[in-house]
Length: 244
Image 1 (cartoon, one colour):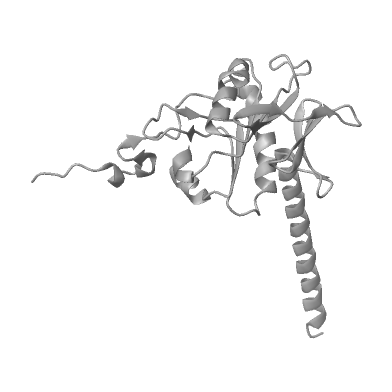
Image 2: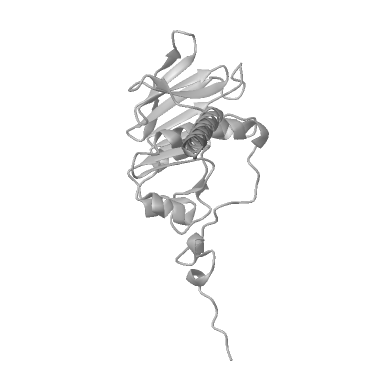
């Protein structure tokens, strides 16, 4: 008996194929300068993910592949953080990658975090490529005190007629470099080496990954304490109602 060869669509990794072309969702290469970059990525992606969680058709991700040329898996880029509005998030989740032609548009916002091994490309090749792809805003953030990798702590640019032009970034009342992202509707602030987001509409700071986790843990602890108190009151009531 002859076994029929499995087609790509029959394979467990079918979501990584299209028309026989394989688009991997990882390359097996650790994040460059991952020890220093990873916490900074969480500080960028987690607040934005939480902030836009209630907005339909919005994708927020970090360090995932964006494929921008159909049938050519060599043409990919992986921002430290990106945001895309008005997209079918299910398509992105299914492929575990962002295929521009499948989604219908490039991301609206991209952020790169400076590191020794990536800074040169972030300032040059990636900047050119992001403009060519059509990413509307491109921000760069250098966590070092002396901006040793980018030469500037915070830079924001928006696409105008196919080329990036700078968005205003200036010291705020506390001397922190601060700029506004029209795309996100948020301020980006360099705060003692941390990137923070501020919502002018609410007058509140977005919580970092650690702050959000601490808030959840505190809320859980309050809920558990309240449940314990209710159980205690019920037990006291039960004892009072017992026949004497």
